[in-house]
Image 1 (cartoon, rainbow, N blue to C red):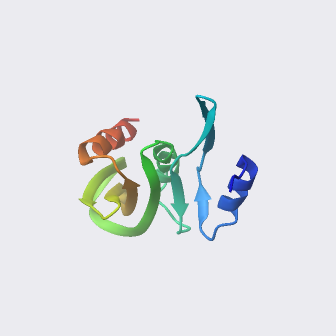
Image 2 (image 1 turned 60 degrees about the vertical axis):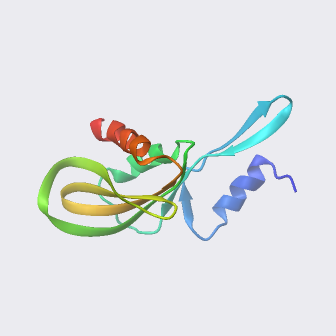
Length: 129
């Protein structure tokens, strides 16, 4: 079954989860059209740390990232002056990261095949900007 881009976008829009930042590209390679679907940002919660979603949208555009899911928000003792994302532990499908700003922390699950060092360097780029 072959779907055109509009049908694929409708498939994403009609899914149960709210998907943000899915990008569908058709690439011509030796007269064969290859469909490339970049990562997605899954929004299950209505509240997120201020400034986190734009960073996660950019992260999801990386071709090696399958999905990015912000999760539980908690209060922490320390204080971080600016938004900072660091890797925490390896999961079955990728890694768990912790985003911190002020006295708030939020778990972020990243589904990827990247190594820990590659993902860490990618997150460091976003932490610097």
